[in-house]
Image 1 (cartoon, rainbow, N blue to C red):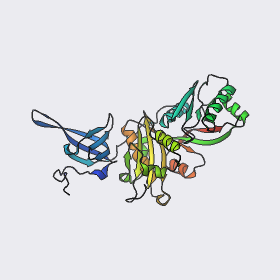
Image 2: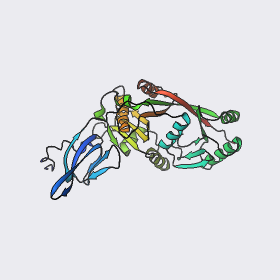
Image 3: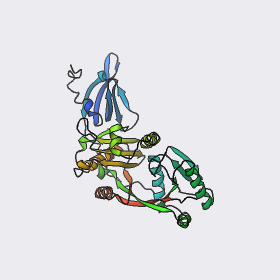
Image 4: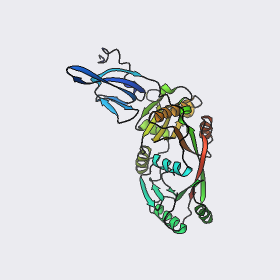
Length: 335
């Protein structure tokens, strides 16, 4: 079958380049019978029979029919500029993290936020207890317990250190709440974007397809949980998914997720197939996502990782992340 792009030698990309950073030129219009061209640089997010879509550094996506494409090539990742970490506090960063992993159901309790997502992850099924709940602590925690019981969910309280009030911690201790510990790590994006190699193997997308979620491994067979996971994963101000494709017909070798919120980029879901580890794929995924976040104006990256996840902690420490603060999930005992 004849390729309609064969007579356009300046078009050096094809549909296999979806997910890569490209530079394209398209015929935009005619003015006084003279052609006017427009250039766009960004991630090639789709290319099908309807045409191409490119996500530039800022503004909305640019879509146009394939017949208007006159030139195109793959370009290097965005050259992130060195910049210090954005100024913030642990409480502010936790609130940013809440926006980057938004629960399906959210309800205020004073300044606290009740969050539920059919049990998909504790982050999306816990109360963010920052500020004043507007009730005395025993009544507030009783309201939390009742809210989660009505949804057949355990009642977890997110406790930030430093950040959560001493009276709250004392009340949770009095109740005998159990704890699960997590670190919040931060790093400048510029150094992260320049880390490692193999970036050309990474493909970026605005959506997580079935192959991506097959490696994520945190979603079960319950349709309600699957739907909650889809909504949480795709929620946030500007969400990108990274994939290192496997062989034809095989699952991905590595994946990752990034949410860009102003000067901060949240990294998560960094997974590598067991047989593909120690080849730098996790680092390549992080670097590609960091470059895209920098292209959208972010200068700092953060992530949340369980203290007991030795492999993930070793990866992030090696990439230059340092601890900003910690937080815990306190499980309220049944009343």
